[in-house]
Image (cartoon, rainbow, N blue to C red; front, side, top):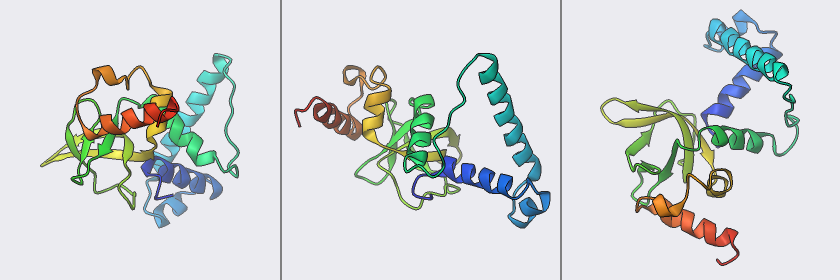
Length: 174
């Protein structure tokens, strides 16, 4: 799972905690904060109640389904499509649209540098970091947020070239 990123790593930690009877000693043994795990569980319960109140269907991909992690990555991207960075040929990342030079935060579990990644947090220290990152595919950007990834309003950068090729491929012209 390290190949997909931090969000899925945290989800798996949550599942492991649940599978260990929400044990505080299990958290201690695994260097986790028990209160943080309980807080995450509380947020999950709140979201489920809100969905029920609005009559929204509670559905998840089965854990054993081969698309389980892909569907979660796509769901994360659908909510954070404006927070995407692209790996440039020079080896650094640029945030898409505003071309800020950033680096993956040292705390990431990613074992590789994905071409595109979605992030939750922009951290400014001695340099710009993006934290809580997950690997995403370029065709998902075009599919989920074509209004945002409209090339007419896109700055000149390597990401624009990749997106242009993706649009052409989608139209069957590449």
